[in-house]
Length: 381
Image (cartoon, rainbow, N blue to C red; front, side):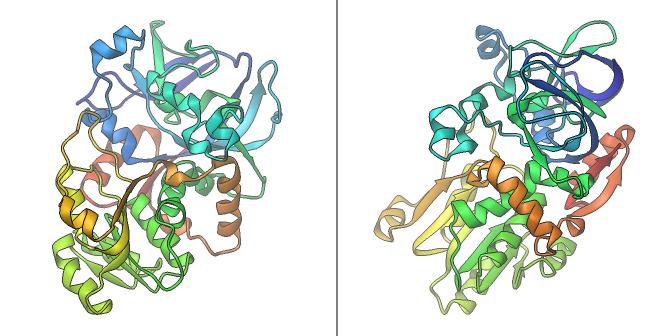
């Protein structure tokens, strides 16, 4: 079938919206008509080159990361089911999880779906089922898809391992958000940081992920949630979603935390900035109390190795520094759970969407993100 898609032909270029050819689903795959796609910062990392595999390394594994159809926060309706698909039928409503879950590998079988072995193939851009392409340019060139999804298109074919069936009364436009950003932020607070009732939490960077971490910390019972971001209107928005205090920078957050904790500092700090850098780690850990925990949720350049950290303080104050992917959540359990919280009015998703766009406006949507105008932009089809 013919459809349209936003393609990134190479890093440091704009998204190009073009007609493409889409093959029908093969074994273990479903064809989905999308209702919406979030404009997540991870796709921006493809543009900037921060999430790009070294071409020589990619070639050695037979991977060709570009050209790629972007997008990985999506929800829609199943319109065709391939052979040997279990658990899905035409008409089902689904949310895509950017982390697939096969249910069979050691990670999945021990309750760590966010570390599913299929994740090793996500940046290769091919179908997880057989490592070929279903998406092709109008001149016949194979197109990759962002983390094997490609939601910057009104139709896409994905593996059944990347889809979560949801109840049909849930608005698909908002459900798309839990495929990455909301679950990642919420889980960063509730799982990775393990926020407990009465604790003080600092959230650094309050875009889509950070604002969800604010909500997660508040829902977990944090006494104080300090939202840190240079953009004033985002700080004001955070106060409506669970933050109790705000600061424009980590430096400005220091006296705030000292005052509200009587010098003890934050029990937990969560790094959700647009691009993690080595210098951020020492700054974050300086906000954390003795035996407190710092969580690195933000994406860094794939080749970044240098980290600043006071090792004496780290050891002598018994602080913890932990990594986090997808909020350390389990997509098949947590995506339906978060959507139930949304339908009950406890998780705020409507308030997370700042602007909606058409697919043709995708470059404007990302410019708005760069300019600090969006918590989360949303493409609607």
